[in-house]
Picture 1: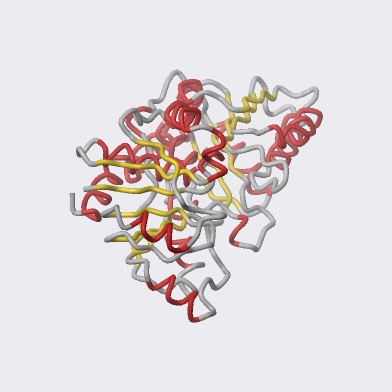
Picture 2: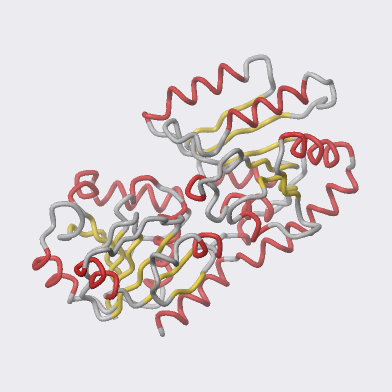
Amino acid sequence: MKIAIYSPYLDTFGGGEKYMMTIAELLIGESLEVDILLDNHLKSLGAGYLKNELSKRFALNLDRVNFIKAPVGKGSTFFIRSFFLLNYDILFYLTDGSIFYPTSKRNILHIQSPLIGQPAKSMWGKLKLKGWDLIIYNSNFTKKHSEKNWPNKSEVIYPPVDVDKIKPLEKKKYILSVGRFFGYLRSKKQEILIKVFRELYETGQLKDWKLFLAGAASSGDEPYLDELKKMSQGLPVSFYPNIEYADLVKLYGQSSLYWHAAGFGDSDPTKMEHFGISIVEAMAGGCVPIVTKKGGQVEIIQKGCGFLWETLSDLKKFSLQAMLDADLRLKVSRAAIKRAKRFSKDMFIEKILKLTNV
């Protein structure tokens, strides 16, 4: 069986890219041939560079996965692309809202964020959409806000989280937040977390507590990162842009609390956390999650395994409760570890293998 995977934003190294590359690692392990399709932009970055970066950042073994130039994406023509895709038994495509007519034997679309717009207003657009056999959503939240305009047969498969690789270590008075330092979107709201941390710190109630902010950052994000550093002057706040996975796992294990503010103040579902891989990773490490009550996070946090907040007053209140009560921290930490297993890589593998009939 021959598999093709196309993710046009492979070089952003985000959650959707980890999702697709985990599928690649899984299927190559089943002795299938897997090709990662590179459009003109991705090809210009270099197949070797992409393979190495994806393997390193996501701790995946992609050695036997092929990264090949393909007639897909911007500039590709219908006939050449269609003829090329006939070579594959299954095509997985991570869409950004755009679609093309697929010609592989089985065609699976992955939607990882709410797509509000309608992709198929014209007859040709409707035909293109009809060519996809299945849509995989990464959460019920994403499905809810997309399926009206993407009415294909669908299934929710939560992203794979390596919960078995993340273990609680000796806990320290660390608050951790993980999310890309998006200079343009500012969707992870790190500035809000610094503001709240300062307010708590200046009350004198955060003795010995530290805030760690980690996540991917490109050259275009540097002005925002500099702004955050200026905001945190005089505070015990540390930044870890482009942190190595092994170092991040250590931080998960050592940190006591996990903060997340994505979606705060937003009514647009596209600006909310569509699932929340880093939240599950933190829970696996025994962190007490204190996250916004929006988006896919609501599907992760259940009663007793964390806190969902709607206002900054809630964030402060829940944080102080956990900081000042060691027994409560331990109780919620244990529940969080147990809950994280619901989103394990093994669960993901089981569902993908069933889906592909391998």
